[in-house]
Length: 226
Image (cartoon, rainbow, N blue to C red; front, side):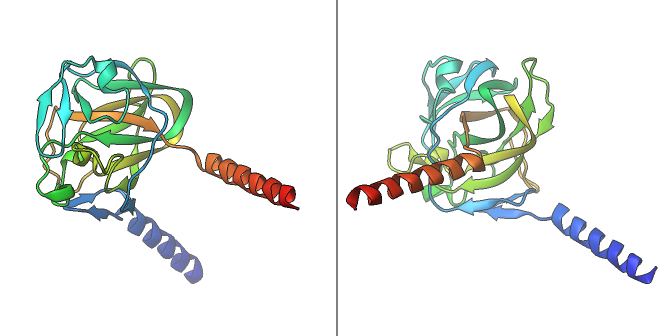
Protein backbone atom coordinates (compact mmCIF):
# COMPACT_ATOMS: atom_id res chain seq x y z
CA UNK A 1 0.00 0.00 0.00
CA UNK A 2 2.81 2.41 0.94
CA UNK A 3 4.61 1.65 -2.36
CA UNK A 4 1.39 2.23 -4.28
CA UNK A 5 0.94 5.64 -2.62
CA UNK A 6 4.53 6.60 -3.48
CA UNK A 7 4.04 5.52 -7.10
CA UNK A 8 0.81 7.49 -7.37
CA UNK A 9 2.51 10.56 -5.93
CA UNK A 10 5.39 10.22 -8.40
CA UNK A 11 3.01 9.98 -11.36
CA UNK A 12 1.12 13.06 -10.16
CA UNK A 13 4.40 14.94 -9.75
CA UNK A 14 5.45 14.20 -13.34
CA UNK A 15 2.01 15.17 -14.67
CA UNK A 16 2.00 18.47 -12.79
CA UNK A 17 5.55 19.33 -13.93
CA UNK A 18 4.62 18.65 -17.54
CA UNK A 19 1.41 20.66 -17.32
CA UNK A 20 3.23 23.76 -16.09
CA UNK A 21 6.28 23.51 -18.38
CA UNK A 22 6.87 26.67 -20.42
CA UNK A 23 9.35 28.02 -22.96
CA UNK A 24 10.70 31.58 -23.00
CA UNK A 25 11.54 33.01 -26.42
CA UNK A 26 12.87 36.54 -26.67
CA UNK A 27 10.59 38.40 -24.29
CA UNK A 28 7.70 35.94 -24.67
CA UNK A 29 6.88 33.04 -22.35
CA UNK A 30 4.78 30.37 -24.04
CA UNK A 31 2.30 28.24 -22.17
CA UNK A 32 3.75 25.34 -24.20
CA UNK A 33 7.07 23.52 -24.16
CA UNK A 34 8.68 24.15 -27.55
CA UNK A 35 11.96 23.52 -29.33
CA UNK A 36 13.64 26.83 -30.19
CA UNK A 37 15.59 26.80 -33.46
CA UNK A 38 18.02 29.67 -34.06
CA UNK A 39 17.87 29.57 -37.87
CA UNK A 40 15.20 29.49 -40.56
CA UNK A 41 12.62 26.98 -41.75
CA UNK A 42 11.86 26.25 -45.43
CA UNK A 43 8.24 25.32 -46.14
CA UNK A 44 7.40 24.11 -49.64
CA UNK A 45 3.64 23.56 -49.47
CA UNK A 46 1.12 26.15 -48.32
CA UNK A 47 -2.48 25.72 -47.23
CA UNK A 48 -5.00 27.49 -49.44
CA UNK A 49 -7.37 30.23 -48.30
CA UNK A 50 -11.02 29.21 -47.97
CA UNK A 51 -12.80 32.06 -46.22
CA UNK A 52 -12.70 34.61 -43.41
CA UNK A 53 -10.57 37.50 -42.33
CA UNK A 54 -11.84 41.08 -42.39
CA UNK A 55 -10.61 41.80 -45.91
CA UNK A 56 -7.69 44.02 -44.85
CA UNK A 57 -4.37 43.01 -46.46
CA UNK A 58 -0.93 44.58 -46.48
CA UNK A 59 2.82 44.08 -46.18
CA UNK A 60 5.13 44.11 -43.15
CA UNK A 61 8.89 44.31 -42.61
CA UNK A 62 9.21 43.76 -38.87
CA UNK A 63 8.90 47.41 -37.85
CA UNK A 64 6.21 48.97 -40.04
CA UNK A 65 3.50 48.07 -42.57
CA UNK A 66 1.38 49.34 -45.45
CA UNK A 67 -1.68 48.34 -47.47
CA UNK A 68 -1.23 46.42 -50.72
CA UNK A 69 -4.66 45.72 -52.24
CA UNK A 70 -4.06 41.96 -52.40
CA UNK A 71 -7.01 39.58 -52.35
CA UNK A 72 -7.33 37.46 -49.22
CA UNK A 73 -6.32 34.34 -51.18
CA UNK A 74 -3.21 36.03 -52.62
CA UNK A 75 -2.15 37.37 -49.22
CA UNK A 76 -2.32 33.86 -47.72
CA UNK A 77 -0.78 32.02 -50.68
CA UNK A 78 2.87 31.92 -49.52
CA UNK A 79 5.43 33.29 -47.06
CA UNK A 80 5.96 36.59 -48.89
CA UNK A 81 5.47 39.13 -46.05
CA UNK A 82 1.96 39.98 -47.27
CA UNK A 83 -0.67 39.50 -44.58
CA UNK A 84 -4.39 39.05 -44.08
CA UNK A 85 -6.05 40.41 -40.96
CA UNK A 86 -8.36 38.52 -38.61
CA UNK A 87 -10.96 38.36 -36.90
CA UNK A 88 -13.27 36.94 -38.26
CA UNK A 89 -11.43 33.63 -38.22
CA UNK A 90 -9.40 32.73 -41.32
CA UNK A 91 -10.11 29.22 -42.63
CA UNK A 92 -7.43 27.44 -44.70
CA UNK A 93 -7.38 24.03 -46.39
CA UNK A 94 -4.93 21.21 -47.08
CA UNK A 95 -5.83 18.36 -49.48
CA UNK A 96 -3.88 16.02 -47.19
CA UNK A 97 -4.88 15.69 -43.52
CA UNK A 98 -2.19 17.21 -41.28
CA UNK A 99 -1.38 16.88 -37.58
CA UNK A 100 0.90 19.94 -37.53
CA UNK A 101 1.20 23.20 -39.46
CA UNK A 102 3.67 26.07 -39.69
CA UNK A 103 2.37 29.55 -38.90
CA UNK A 104 4.27 32.42 -40.54
CA UNK A 105 3.57 35.71 -38.72
CA UNK A 106 3.51 39.23 -40.13
CA UNK A 107 5.35 41.34 -37.56
CA UNK A 108 5.02 45.10 -38.05
CA UNK A 109 6.01 46.39 -34.59
CA UNK A 110 9.45 44.86 -33.89
CA UNK A 111 11.34 46.48 -31.05
CA UNK A 112 14.96 46.04 -32.17
CA UNK A 113 17.13 44.22 -34.70
CA UNK A 114 15.79 40.76 -35.59
CA UNK A 115 12.86 41.34 -33.21
CA UNK A 116 14.80 39.98 -30.23
CA UNK A 117 12.79 42.28 -27.98
CA UNK A 118 9.44 41.39 -29.57
CA UNK A 119 7.22 39.58 -27.12
CA UNK A 120 3.72 39.08 -28.40
CA UNK A 121 3.06 39.85 -32.07
CA UNK A 122 4.46 36.58 -33.49
CA UNK A 123 2.13 34.70 -31.13
CA UNK A 124 -1.04 36.84 -31.07
CA UNK A 125 -3.20 34.17 -32.67
CA UNK A 126 -4.44 30.66 -32.02
CA UNK A 127 -4.77 27.88 -34.57
CA UNK A 128 -7.48 25.24 -34.37
CA UNK A 129 -8.04 22.02 -36.22
CA UNK A 130 -11.30 22.64 -38.05
CA UNK A 131 -13.72 21.41 -40.71
CA UNK A 132 -15.36 22.90 -43.80
CA UNK A 133 -17.83 24.80 -41.59
CA UNK A 134 -15.03 26.56 -39.68
CA UNK A 135 -15.83 24.87 -36.36
CA UNK A 136 -13.07 25.17 -33.73
CA UNK A 137 -12.51 21.47 -33.04
CA UNK A 138 -9.06 21.30 -31.40
CA UNK A 139 -6.70 24.03 -30.27
CA UNK A 140 -3.11 23.45 -31.34
CA UNK A 141 0.01 23.68 -29.17
CA UNK A 142 3.26 25.37 -30.17
CA UNK A 143 5.96 22.69 -30.33
CA UNK A 144 8.75 24.39 -32.33
CA UNK A 145 9.77 27.97 -33.11
CA UNK A 146 12.25 29.31 -35.70
CA UNK A 147 13.82 32.56 -34.51
CA UNK A 148 14.60 33.84 -38.01
CA UNK A 149 11.41 32.61 -39.62
CA UNK A 150 11.40 31.71 -43.30
CA UNK A 151 13.30 34.63 -44.85
CA UNK A 152 16.56 36.00 -43.44
CA UNK A 153 17.90 37.91 -46.45
CA UNK A 154 15.34 40.29 -47.98
CA UNK A 155 14.53 43.85 -46.91
CA UNK A 156 11.32 42.53 -45.30
CA UNK A 157 13.03 39.60 -43.56
CA UNK A 158 12.15 40.51 -39.96
CA UNK A 159 8.41 40.23 -40.55
CA UNK A 160 8.35 36.43 -40.30
CA UNK A 161 10.68 35.96 -37.30
CA UNK A 162 9.47 33.47 -34.67
CA UNK A 163 7.55 31.32 -37.15
CA UNK A 164 5.92 28.55 -35.12
CA UNK A 165 4.89 24.92 -35.52
CA UNK A 166 1.43 24.12 -34.15
CA UNK A 167 0.75 20.48 -33.36
CA UNK A 168 -2.50 18.59 -32.82
CA UNK A 169 -3.52 15.18 -31.49
CA UNK A 170 -5.80 14.68 -34.49
CA UNK A 171 -5.28 15.23 -38.23
CA UNK A 172 -7.26 17.83 -40.14
CA UNK A 173 -7.76 19.14 -43.66
CA UNK A 174 -9.04 22.49 -42.40
CA UNK A 175 -7.47 24.88 -39.89
CA UNK A 176 -8.81 28.12 -38.43
CA UNK A 177 -6.69 31.12 -37.36
CA UNK A 178 -8.27 33.36 -34.71
CA UNK A 179 -7.08 36.14 -32.41
CA UNK A 180 -5.64 35.08 -29.07
CA UNK A 181 -2.30 33.73 -27.90
CA UNK A 182 -0.52 30.92 -26.10
CA UNK A 183 1.52 33.26 -23.89
CA UNK A 184 1.84 33.67 -20.13
CA UNK A 185 0.51 37.16 -19.45
CA UNK A 186 1.02 38.33 -23.03
CA UNK A 187 -0.59 41.68 -23.99
CA UNK A 188 -1.99 40.34 -27.25
CA UNK A 189 -4.34 42.40 -29.40
CA UNK A 190 -7.83 41.07 -28.70
CA UNK A 191 -9.98 40.77 -31.81
CA UNK A 192 -7.38 41.53 -34.47
CA UNK A 193 -4.01 40.51 -35.82
CA UNK A 194 -2.19 39.60 -39.02
CA UNK A 195 -0.95 36.32 -40.47
CA UNK A 196 1.30 35.84 -43.51
CA UNK A 197 0.62 32.19 -44.36
CA UNK A 198 0.01 28.68 -43.02
CA UNK A 199 2.24 25.94 -44.41
CA UNK A 200 2.49 22.17 -44.17
CA UNK A 201 5.27 20.57 -42.15
CA UNK A 202 6.49 17.13 -43.32
CA UNK A 203 5.60 14.37 -40.89
CA UNK A 204 8.52 12.43 -39.28
CA UNK A 205 7.95 9.49 -41.60
CA UNK A 206 8.45 11.85 -44.56
CA UNK A 207 11.89 12.75 -43.25
CA UNK A 208 12.64 9.05 -42.74
CA UNK A 209 11.63 8.27 -46.33
CA UNK A 210 13.76 11.15 -47.59
CA UNK A 211 16.81 9.96 -45.65
CA UNK A 212 16.23 6.39 -46.82
CA UNK A 213 16.03 7.63 -50.41
CA UNK A 214 19.28 9.55 -50.03
CA UNK A 215 20.90 6.45 -48.57
CA UNK A 216 19.81 4.37 -51.56
CA UNK A 217 21.15 7.01 -53.94
CA UNK A 218 24.49 6.96 -52.13
CA UNK A 219 24.59 3.16 -52.27
CA UNK A 220 23.83 3.20 -56.01
CA UNK A 221 26.56 5.80 -56.60
CA UNK A 222 29.10 3.67 -54.73
CA UNK A 223 28.13 0.62 -56.78
CA UNK A 224 28.59 2.56 -60.02
CA UNK A 225 32.09 3.57 -58.91
CA UNK A 226 33.05 -0.06 -58.41
